[in-house]
Image 1 (tube, rainbow, N blue to C red):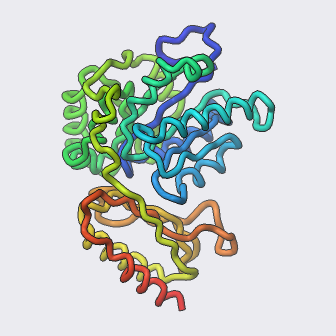
Image 2: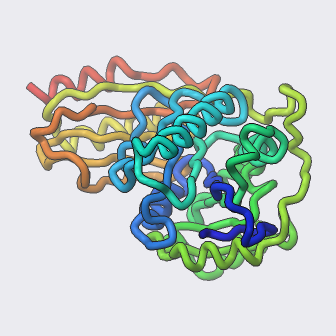
Length: 336
């Protein structure tokens, strides 16, 4: 059985891990690695995503038979009912053996969620608390962009506010001096917090669980969610799905993404999706304050699969008009 801070060996409730972090912080990459390791093998997943098409759910769902998607809802506002429903569905599916037994559950929030309502609900709502226990709150931050993200986005600050463990990802992208400065900044924001470093998902599940066992208890902080108006963002972001044609030019796609980024500026919070190009099926991802989109081979689909080819764009409210028409026109022209 997976132990958690402040639990006892007699506690037979299902351990629930909350994994959060701002858009592009690397939490899905870490989780995908943990699911291949014995401690998290066969874990159940609940993935909370903004947008019509859940890319993270598709990428992670292949690693386990027990996964659920809470789409187009942010956990700290309208997402809690979806979380409760997903937990209940998984509980009954396991009880009736429609899915294999699972040792724990990992709940990955959207990148703009304030995570505080989840442990609060798990600790105060009887029908959630009876079968489940919080096993750890983990927040990811990208070493390359964390300072800018924390400076510009209150949601990111709320995500570290109640974390038991902060995981700094993508440490290979910054100098040792920059990494040390970031760690000092985080310790100043949250004294006593446990910090872990990870490059290419190098933080394994054994190290993770050890750090959580040694972590201090969560503390009540400023982001109290007893009042609806306490949310720091109130869904100040929207998701747009751009369905893309088959097959498009990879150089033109990257050119148009760069043009889109230049047009929207910092209002473009996230871009991700799977596309079929003349170089095959690719995953495209762009995180806040990153200059160039990351491109990799799609591990799940081939050009012959009936996949949902397209991009999800998460855009801040008040953004300039999105040049969707020009973007789509250029890509459709390249497919003929």
